[in-house]
Image (cartoon, rainbow, N blue to C red):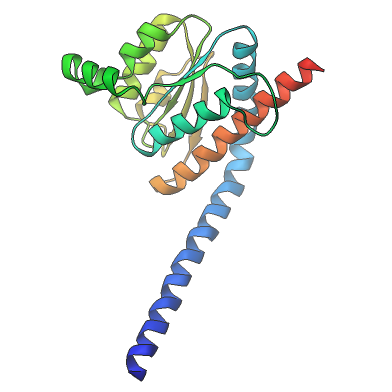
Length: 209
């Protein structure tokens, strides 16, 4: 029994060290990204606020954890972030199961977002395109559709930015987390989305005073 107890204690200590390493890695990466991403985030947030102020909307797309981030972002816009303000128009293109399955069935999974951008997007809107690899085919197709419809793109990517980075023009915004681990990239992405929400609130709130 004593040996088993010692084994469990040692195992728990190892797991505690593992958890602590995640916190330390996340803190280090966020400190690094605060230097490289802050100016780009401020510019992207200002562009998003300007688009919303002019009566346009945000569309967001991504897969898996990035799909959840899209829904989180849209909820912060339509509901509120940290202050009372008018509801802001944002749509997560990841939530309409009928549209996703119909488009996926008829056109293929690569087009589940692009068809929605073509149908819902208008010039002046902004596409928030999220991919930890920067190579998600359906997000890339959504960016192509955005270009065709006159939407600017805020791209949240990881690693080297992938194919998405090469598609961006001067009117677009690239928020890249140059890190190899998906979980770390996603952690910074959600922080970046919160920063976008806060910049939008600060800009629009300042204009309302």
